[in-house]
Length: 239
Image 1 (cartoon, rainbow, N blue to C red):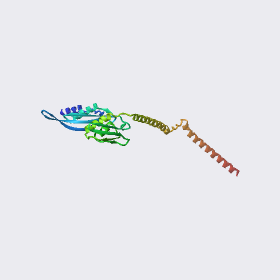
Image 2 (tube, rainbow, N blue to C red):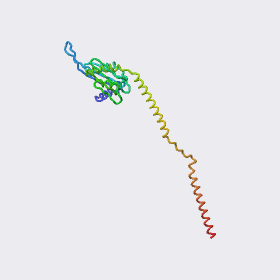
Image 3 (tube, helix red, strand yellow):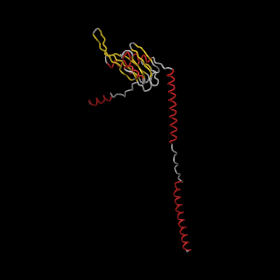
Image 4 (tube, rainbow, N blue to C red):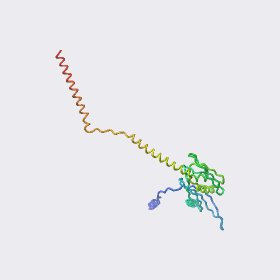
């Protein structure tokens, strides 16, 4: 009886397939903070979380709680409220940008394809989760991750699409469209060239033709043999 009950509970607890998360989460920093009250000190946790979809959206949030999981959950919820959209052109930013925020001074520059993310700490993670693949950066100020993350969020929110970037994106779209058209045309042409003409099946009447030809050959050979025999007999009589 007990085994049947446990089996039923297991079937009930069978988890449904997990849904894919819309954003990737990264805990930038986890601190243990204390608050002094009348009764003494209260210990809590402060989590700094970065979220992003690697397609132009990124956010940062802070959360506090008595447990690490609670703090991380609060930070992720706060980060969703602070989401921003980052303009990305050819896997990099559209123009250079410099910003001073509190004690942080950060400079970011667009880079050519294949450069990679030349950045570190919070700057690298913010750009990676935003979807930027090629960039140059330099930090001239503090090394505090929380301040650097807040500075990067503000810096990325001030990026704008320039006219040159818009023209570049339009040219890229045209090139992709022309390449697609060429590929489809080449596939069609290659498909026509590779097709071999189908061999015609012999008709029902053509099946009997080889037999008739063989019979005619045999009859002609017999006639020639008879002719040759008669000629030899005539020559013998003359002699």
